[in-house]
Image (cartoon, rainbow, N blue to C red):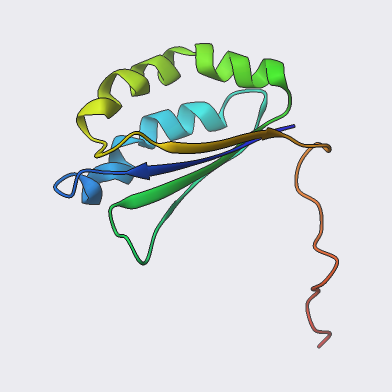
Length: 109
C-alpha cells in the first residue's frame, strides 16, 4: 500500500473556501478503484493549513491517480490558491488498509 501525507498552506484569503475547491477532486479520487482513503483535516493552530492523508492499494494505483484527469485539473488550478509548495511524505507500507489499534478498545457496558 502507498501512504501519502501532504501539508498544504493556503493563501489566507482563500483558506475558507479550500475544502469546497477540492471537493470535486476529493470525490473523484475516492471513486478510483485503487483508492483506500483520501481524507482532509484542518490545523487548529494554523487555520490556513490543511493536511491530506491518502492511501492507494499499490504503486500502480498511485500512478493511475497521478495520471488521472482530475489530478491534472487540480494541479493546474492549485498554484493560484496555495501560499507555499506543499510538503509531502510518501511511503510504501505493508498491508492493504487500516488495522486495529492494539492499545485501545471500547469499554464494555
